[in-house]
Image (tube, rainbow over all chains, first blue to last red; front, side):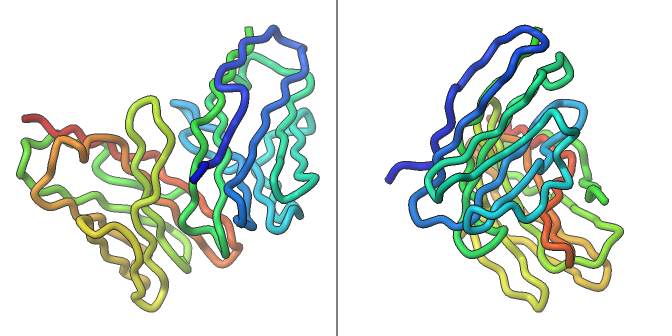
Length: 113
Length: 109
């Protein structure tokens, strides 16, 4: 079975550019999560959706970050404009029925120069 | 709000046991444990629910003390494959999972 699919795997871009990260959750899963991982801050929850509806976006750092889930099989996380401090590994995860048993994608390693 | 894990790092020989602790200052509904190998994504290990129900990995056990808001992960007869960073995630009544800073476990031959 296909797991959570994220794209791109790596992204290097210059400060000020728009960055779009993509995620395809496991089919049938009704929860989708976006995380950011850095050495300094660890694994942080940015936002999560239930049945395509955002439930908690209190972890989104600022207005430069936005996330959408237009349907059950696709979600995006956008950063506009990007800054060097946004450099991190961004993970998408999905689960069925609640916050437990989350399946993580391989992550997107983002570097903002 | 972030749970505190201890120890931060531990080195074991194959076959030795380890305990990783997770402590929260808030009342908890559940505690979740994940393992992340270097350069890979976190992988779910176990969930412990308020009331004592436990679901997850066959070879790893854990406890959840609701009154003390603490959980411990027990790794017995460690194998080389147990190496990685272990994260606890705590869920309070707000319905949000917050991860600790992680415990790095290294198992040597």
